[in-house]
Length: 104
Image (tube, rainbow, N blue to C red):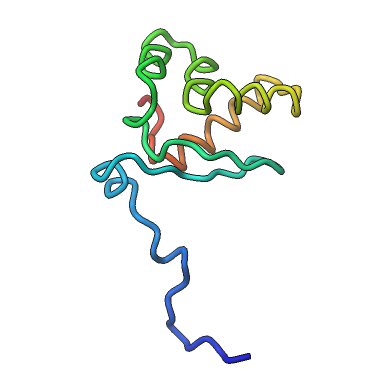
């Protein structure tokens, strides 16, 4: 097996920035929460409009459900029997992956 040269880039070094993904649109991001992987829109702008409406109405759980999609959200709930703390943790992971900051 050959050695990797010092300073060689790794695949994660080639990831696009949140700004670049937002500019290009239509991409996805894979997040890992506990032992589950979820494929989500890469930016909030690629989510259904109901996500923005849920955020405006202060409905965080509905916003997360809208970002994840109904089937993935139902699977998340069925497998994990999540608490509010779990939902908040998942929302934090989603927000970080999508390049969102608190209050967005």
